[in-house]
Image (cartoon, rainbow, N blue to C red):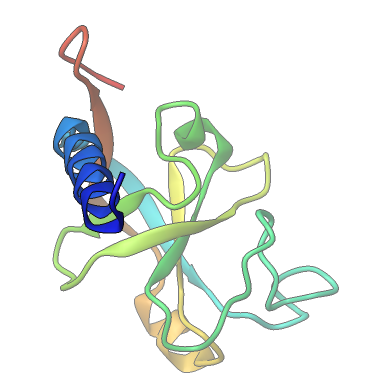
Length: 142
């Protein structure tokens, strides 16, 4: 078999494999709820021995748009890396941290080292929107 013929067969084989590959696109929905939102900083006085490391092991850096969630919200599907929108604030936040077990239906916005900004935020009730995966088999929101 000639070299050119072998190349032709190989090209057809790879084209067939690529053509058979089914593209899987995950579908998401946004759910909402009202929670109490406070703010926190990556300081020893507010967190653990390693204030830049989250409970999930992520490294925090000032300027990141992330939040910590109470553990009851994790059970509702607001887990690590879930995208969050907060009523009245532009942008999308990512869940990177967990709060102490004593808190319920709460969220903390990460505000880097800016203590004044965190104090200015204070404590607010806000509607949040969180992104969850839709089960394509049962068409249910997970």
